[in-house]
Amino acid sequence: MGNTIRSMTGFGKAYYRDDRLKLVVLIRSVNGKGLEISVRTPKELVIYEKELRNRLKDTVYRGNVSVSVQLEFFKIKPTVKISDLAEVVEEILSATKRLGLNISDDLTLQLAMKFYNPAASEESYIESEEFKRLLFEVFEKALLDFVRSKEEEGKNLLKDIENQLGTLERLLKEVEKRAPLLVENYKRKLLSRAKELLNNTESGLVVNELKLLLEKADINEEIQRLKSHINLFRQELNKGFPIGKKLEFITQEMLREVNTMGNKLPDLFPLNVEMKTAIDKLRQQVANIE
Image (tube, rainbow, N blue to C red; front, top):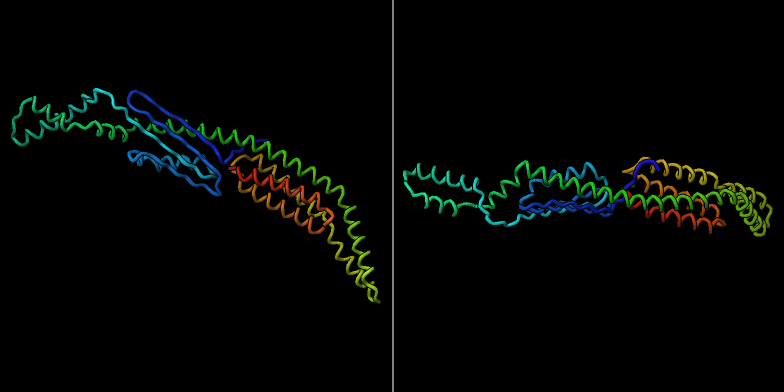
């Protein structure tokens, strides 16, 4: 086959860890008629959910996709960051100066330690460009892993699809080979039965009308259309994703032709059942394709 096809099911994971934090991104997907995306992040990262969602929309076209982002800051001692503490001291000195107060250095430091909030430093970092860059680097790695898993599963689907297409083509050749004789036998049986039932002077007219109806027993048009559907199916496979919806439609048309063959020619029953089975298996595989 030409281009890659993707399964709608997939899983991807990536993580980052240093002495300050651990960041984990998980992406999962299951079958779906359209595209539905769910993003779960800690409340501190809600500001990035829209961008994460949009990035997924650029890559995934079908399926129910869920993204989970986990963030943990480590409590490492000493927890005081001198530069941040210095900012608090400056704020205290500025406030006391405005109020005309004069306090000792020891008291200033005590107040600074009291008001110093390491969590505020974490919040500031989360909103920084540095953290945003880190978050999306980890996300892109998880997304790459996710897409690879979908493509790997797509290879397995493609093998099964090729097997079912081969089975369907083999059965169709058998139908094409046997159809003329089956049609003639079917006509002969019906005409013979009609002659037994019709013993009046107008029986000839009835038989002629019956002959006209039996002309419709020919299934050559259905055979040719089914061949066209199989060829179109292969062409779509060569285009690569997203092709799932189009392939589902083609399999519906395949089934329509096979049903018509069975209705027109009851003697085709055993082969008809086998073709329906092959198409049903094909539809099951196609239902997994993005």
